[in-house]
Length: 204
Image (tube, rainbow, N blue to C red; front, side, top):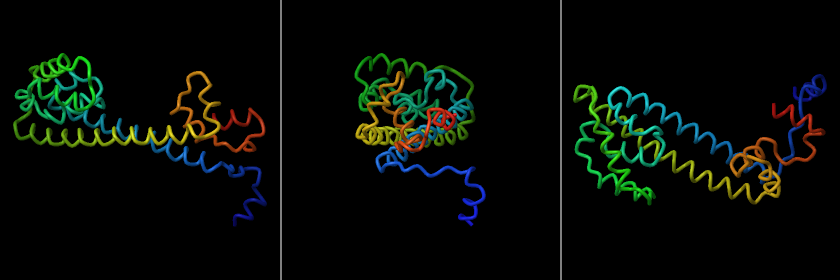
């Protein structure tokens, strides 16, 4: 069957690129890194939708739910009732543990004040159930954040070892991550594209 396809429709198919093992590994890591970022954003969107239903003060306090501060606050105070008992010192300790060094006390007070803003409440049992779901989202966001960091470190290492890395990062606006994505999608087979027009057409 494959031989017949090549015999009758050869012009409709491209030869598989002969990319190096290095380029193929960069491709795998670049796609995994991007997929994990998309997963993180999807979880954040679900958490935002949930919080809007029972804890709008949290969304007023944090614009970005993927940040370390937002994740720690959601873990410590997943419900308005928990936020009432949350102390700035507890938040400050969590922020320091997460790596924040400047303005910790001020940020902790801002977070606690924001989470305690009055708003309409769900029935107690409903609020508790939603809080447990939000806590699960907080754990998932922390896990994906760690995965993004780990994959980015592996991607950076693999990309910087490739001989084409200095060429790609010399382009304005291209850093390590975007350069690695381009290398992964285009590859390093010098015979893959006969002309610059062919590369442009492939890139779309």
